[in-house]
Image 1 (cartoon, one colour):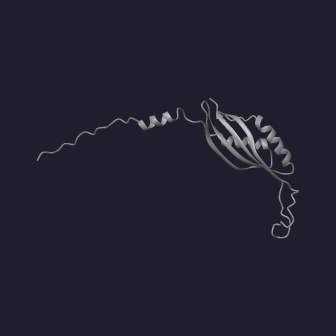
Image 2 (cartoon, rainbow, N blue to C red; image 1 turned 180 degrees about the horizontal axis):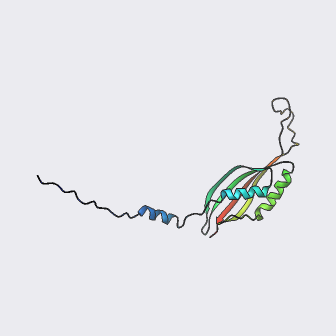
Image 3 (cartoon, helix red, strand yellow; image 1 turned 90 degrees about the vertical axis):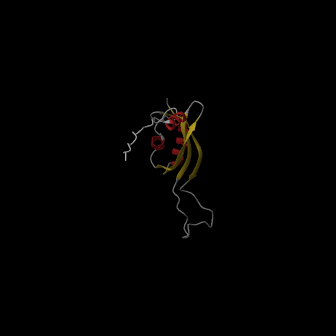
Length: 151
């Protein structure tokens, strides 16, 4: 019986069609996310006794710009939390953030809520032990910041 010879291995060149489609969706690679650097500079601007309660970010785009919309809930504590909150609200729209590759296009305060040390609950409200509840002085700010990529 005659031996059968194996056919030579044939390779088909890959067209990388999927990669080309993906490149058309994003004409260039997005730059690094500025979220953590923005929060660090915001905490520095807010001063001591300030902390971030929650943050979120999502992509944003217009006809000419690409960026990220940041939502931040910031808590200011301490004796002078009212005054520090007022100063932050006033300074935030004009604050200069230095984030490489990004520009802060808009920064504003969406909401403000304050609780003071001298808070007196309505009669009959207690913490369950018969004492008045202890509430530390703090101000909570909801901030909205838009960063756009610097070309």
